[in-house]
Image (cartoon, rainbow, N blue to C red; front, side, top):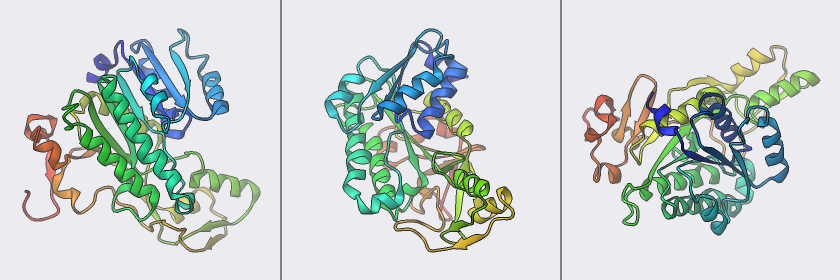
Length: 319
């Protein structure tokens, strides 16, 4: 695989490393590419979680390649310093609780937008080779501040490729996921907790549906993307789609389901690709790839791996 050669002797930096996706990607790299990588720097703003992460992986870290970094992506100077000597950045740090974001929007803006801008600037300043942003389907036609800030973060990553100070020297691309199965605070945790206690489960709408991907599948996808990205793409794995109520019935058949109402900013159904994006998207067996116009104007899609993929069009003809 291309990725094997690409990670060899590289220094990886993972933001949000104590979160679900960041921690899962860390585990995937350690279990599959530990001997290849030079070092893996892991960033968290929570000292206790960072300590627990290092302790968890200590049995696998036989050569001391995991380097903890305590800090916040909001801290511009610290991030610029931490990215010195880094080759690959996986940016998964974010504030993501939809309901809290509606009450504290600027806190979400400071992390998801301003923090991402700090990552972009530090990558370019330190001549990082490649950076991947972990995004969400909530960035598609967003109805919440979380989704809106992740959309802005995506745009920051895309535009960074064509800035005059960069011009594709550092490649910035995006991975857009749906819901991660068994992520912290997910419906799967809630179902298990209610089942253990014999309690009813609240559901905000009977037709609530989501895209789902496992932590293992998501982690592999992120690492694979690092090997094929050419800068500016939004990579979307093909995921399963299911109603939340069906998942509840499968995992907790005897559950009493109480229908309430959607929370502030919450969608009933999510989308992976907007109507607009369908005209600049490509389709393969296991993924969709969105290729923005500002990238295509500088690096036409048919000069990249996308030339071997099918165009996905919202209308009868492609632009």
